[in-house]
Structures are given as C-alpha cells and as structure tokens.
Amino acid sequence: MELGQYLWTSLGAFLTLSVFSFLYKDNPMYKFAEHLFVGVSAGYFVIILWHDGLVTNLFGRLADGHIYKLWLDSTKWWYIFPGILGLMMFTRFSHKWSWVSRWPVAFYIGIATGLSIPLEMSNRVNRQLYAMMEPVNWDSFMGSGWLDMGAGYSDIIVFVGTVSALIYFYFSKAHTGVFGGAAKLGIWTLMIGFGASFGFTVMARISLLINRIQFLDKNWKRNSFDFTNENFNPLYQALFWLIILIFLVYAVSEFLKYLKNKNASSVKSA
Amino acid sequence: MNWFERFMKLDRRWIYLFLITVCLLAYYSDFTVPTIREKETGAIYNFIDSLPAGEVIFVAIDYDPSSQAELHPMTYAIIEHAFRKNLKVVFTALSQNGPGMADQAIHDIADSMRVEQTYNGVSYPAREIANGVDYCFLGYKPYYALVITAMGQDFRTPFPADYYGTPLDSLPLMKKLHNYDDISIVVEVSSGNISDAWISYGQGKFGFPLAMGLTGVMTAQYYPFLQSGQVMGIMGGLLGAAQYEDMADNPGLAKDGMRVQLPAHLVIILFILIGNIGHFASRKNRKNVQS
Image (cartoon, rainbow over all chains, first blue to last red; front, side, top):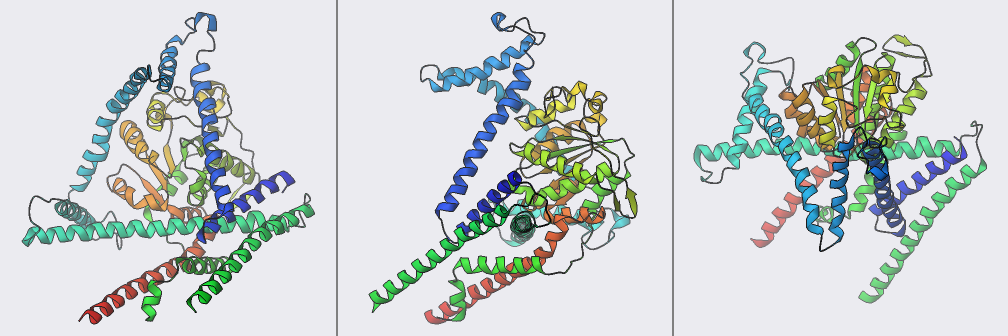
C-alpha cells in the first residue's frame, strides 16, 4: 500500500473508532466524525448533481447552440424549457416572486403523479392481490421441503394470514367471537412478520460491525505492519500507534473522571 | 435488589462491550459455519450462470457507504461471476453516494480478473476488463423513478454519456444496446426505496427479469414480490451474499463475516431471554409485594 492510500485508510480507521466511541458517550471525536460526514455528503451531492445532472443533461444538449441566440439555434432547443423551469425554482428566495416557483413544482408533481398512480396501483396493489388469491397447488401441496414458498400450503397461509391481518385493522366491529378469533390470528401473523424483520435487522446491524472489524484488521492493521510491502514506511506504524494512543488517552481520562465522581458521591453520602 | 432487577437496570454499555468482545473472539478464531443454499439466491445464481457468453446483464448499484457491509460482497460476487462467464455488464448508481461504490467495485474486480482462478472446478484464465467493451458504467442521475422509466425507452435519454464523460454511442458495448429489451436481467442491489421504483417503474412497465440484493432490514418486506413473481430472486443481507459466494465457489468477506454472525446472534438471543425472564420475574415480584 502506498503512503497516500495508507493515509486515507488511517483516516477511515480513525473515523470508524471515533463513531464507535459514541457507544460509550458523546465526545469531541464523534462530533468531528459526524460533522465531517454530513459536510462531505452534502458537498459531494451538490457536485455530483452539477456534473451528472446539469452539465451532461442540460448544458451538453444545448452545447451546439449559441449563448447570444439564447440557444434557440441548438438542435435540441426544447431543453431550454426544463432549464427555465429549474431557474424558476430560485424565485423561492424572494417573498415577492416566490409564487413563480409553484409552476415547476406543479409541473413535476403532475408528471410524477400521472406516471406513478397507474403503475403503483398495478404493481403494488393489483399484482399483490392476484398473488394472494392464487389457486392452491394440490399437485405439490407439501412442496420440496420445510417452508418451501412454492408449496401448496403456503398459498393457504398467505391467504388466511392476509385476510386475518386485515380483520385485525377493521375497527367498526367489536373483536369478539369468530371475528375476534380471526383478529387474534391477524395479530399473530403480524408478529411473525415483525419477528422475521427483527431477525434480519439484527443480522444487518451485526454485519456493519463485522465489516468495520474486517476493515480495521485487514485494511488498516495488516498494512501498518506489512514489512514485506515494498512501499512500507515506518510512518505507518507511528500513525497506527498514534491513533490507538488518542483513544487510550480518552479512555483513561474518562476512567479517571468516573473515579473522581464516584469518590465525590461517596464523600457526599457519608 | 434481586439479580433479575439488577439485570433489568444493567447499563447498556456492558452489553455493547460484551457483544464486541464476542465478535472479536469469533473473528480471530479459526472455525467455519456451513452455508445453507436457499432457493431465492439460487435462482439468481443459476440464471446468471446459464447465460451464454456475450449476453448483457444490468447491475444497479443503488446503495451508499453506510450499507456497503452487506451489499458490497453481493456486488463483488455477482460482477466477478459475470465477468468470469464472459458476460457484459452495464452499471448504474441511482443513489447519491452510489457512484463511488460502483467505481470501487468495478476497479477491484478488474484487478482480481488479472489473476487466473478456478471456481467450481472450472479454470478461468486471467484477462483484462475494458471499459466500453466488457462493461459500461452509466453513473448517477437524480430522480430515480424518472431515470428508470426513461431507460426503458433508450439508455441515451437519461445518460447521453457514461460516468467518465464518454458519449454512449462511441462505446462499442453500447452501440448495440438501446433499452431493457437488450438486457438479460436487471440485478438491483439496493439499500432504500429505489427497489420499489425498480419493481413499479421498471419490471412492472417493461417486464424484464428482476433480481434483488437487499439489506437485511429490507429483505422481509420484499418477499411478497418474490411470491407474486415480480422479483425472480432475492439475496437478503450478508447471508444472501454468503450464499452467492458459496455457490460461485468464491468465498469473500460475506462468508468470512457469517462466522461472526453465529455467536453474535446467540448473544442477542441470550440477552432477549434474560430480558424476558427479568421482566416476568420483576412483574411477579411486584405483584407479590402488592398482595
């Protein structure tokens, strides 16, 4: 690993440890990492919008026109209109002219609504309803194994689970008798769904921790002590121990503070 | 104070410390855990594996660094599998910080392709992966729903040039590619709502086979789309990535990470049990005091 790359990796390691230090309590290193992340993300987003949005999709398409002709001589002159709509958004900064910005917003919402309503209805409602009402596959009722999604019984589970969960959310009738039993089945269905989500969520959070451990070990620690690397520099080890030292000093200072507070409270209670 | 009342008032930082210690011990221990190959991951692997050389797949890298722990291993496994099979790949990154993720993955896989490897008993020679010939990275554009819809007409509508600024028509790979009709499968690797847009505005409107690599948090939410046939396969979290790596015989960070998942889950289950026992015991204790 070359020096420049190692410095970036060490910065990543420092920021990783800074963020983890929040698990103990809020501290200046965590604050630094948090503010750096927010700032870099915002700056990066603005630049990428400029380069990947405006430069290629607007200026690039009007590039064969001339500014003194207001790009009307461009072969794709109609791209002037989205440009004007975009500029109209900046009237938000004026109290007097801010109403103008409603036009591009209305234009965008109109297009988005027209596009999304039929597609969302078709793909997220109708097709899900069809899937819920699939005929039972009696030929493969038991499927190929435990919890096989293609098994016939899973169609029955999906249908009964969906209907009973909907019954649980029907509040115009008291949840008593058969209706109450169905509602109870509905809440069990929901709980099983939440349980599955929780299990996956635990896996996701642990995955983040594992990834950081892999990064600190494989990318940072190993390169800090990789004497076989032809680009190895003693600075690598020095930087590694400096970062460790920063967090050790912080941990010791917090421990001393803890002891001081404990002594003070015991003197007070005595 | 009883032991269970002490447990109920245990400072959460002790739990963090215990969990991190268990994870570190597991990470530095030498053991393996078997990977169960599930159908939903197998469907994606088998589909890509059965494609003839020269076919084009579309990989949408729609995640930020905050999700790279789970999703990068999936991306790496799929891309390397595709390149080893001599498939062509078109990339997009419709998440704001996604282009960096995609660029890193493409370069890392291009490096690993320079080494001869044997996967599942088949030897794959080393080769160079060329931009514009073996792959095309289209980059990022805002408003993903509109971009996904526009790509159904022509990739050139939202992306007149690729991520590196080269006009699409000057790239040999893109000369014959116009829209989703020229693509064998779309693999959407995502950590957010972009997956919904790929289902509604992409697969629902244009009918291409759609496979999904999702974060663990999202996975359960997307299983209904598998049941309805709108999605042909799902890789869920690090487990899905490990399964794909296992099928491709290319163990990476996901397989390595699954070793740590097992003891970490056992710790979580242990604390759930202790928490529940403590809750019921303290409730019983309160009732006894009241009576």
